[in-house]
Length: 147
View: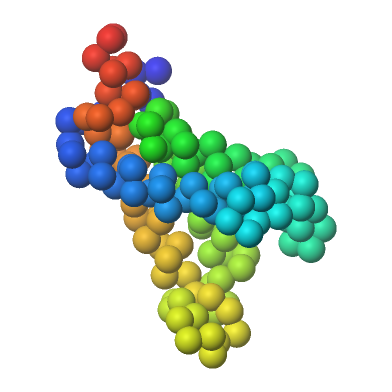
């Protein structure tokens, strides 16, 4: 447990963690709650298991990582575990959905689909958190200080 919650006193880790959580939360809220124009849990599960052809457990993990993982990041709880989930999720997204579209985002709507540059940024932020931990202003830091 010490390894999971171990963190440093870095403000940079705190900033990366909160920003990553705030970026992921709307995507997770779309999938879980139907907020921000999303389809909610049932609609997203239907799409991911039907149209996308994912096994139900993978579809469930996609939703859980983006929703609960984002909340955990914002508060700095189990940051390293969440980071591993995000790295796995976004690597899978690149391989299954975006690699064939190339690197760049589809800013002008003239490409066949979105590239994977955004996903690489998310992976990079998650790797930084995996290495450094949640930072000083986090539940992980408070738990570490207790032990």
